[in-house]
Image 1 (tube, rainbow, N blue to C red):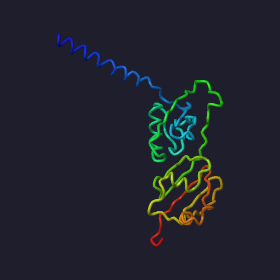
Image 2: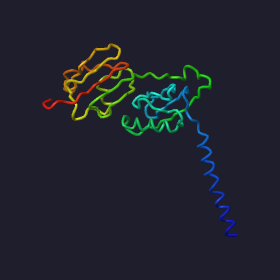
Image 3: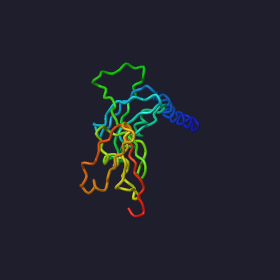
Image 4: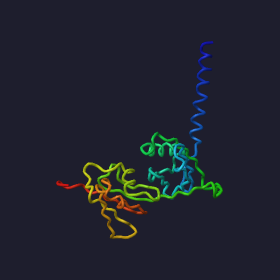
Length: 204
């Protein structure tokens, strides 16, 4: 009788384990051409539907470019939540719903197409690299998203280079802006802008 009870108990424990493995194996994997409906419970202004680009990536505000092809919607939601945790007051709850390429287009009113501005931050920033920011984002706001300046940044001679006008270099005096003397010099960023933050010299 004791052996029989043990066999029955083992069989009962194996059922939920097998079910969980089957559910995980059946979870949809995102592909290029899909559309992802992303909802941020704590900030509805971030809700949007984004396309999965041919390279398998998406762009999302504050998270930048994310490789999502081959991943599940829940894992992508976790990655976006981690990226937003330093921006929002509390770790956000992010829901991601995949709409495969072969599904019909949802009604136009239900689709909010992604609109972002891709910029690049180089040099003495806390988190340099490519950034996807919302239209209207200014120089100071972009620096905030990049973790601010390091202690070694030359705050009076930061450069803003515009891809649309090759050769144009705007010198931004961060120190003057922070003193309130140059808020009109806080430019709005446009697609392809490159912010270069040089290292300060010995006597700066």
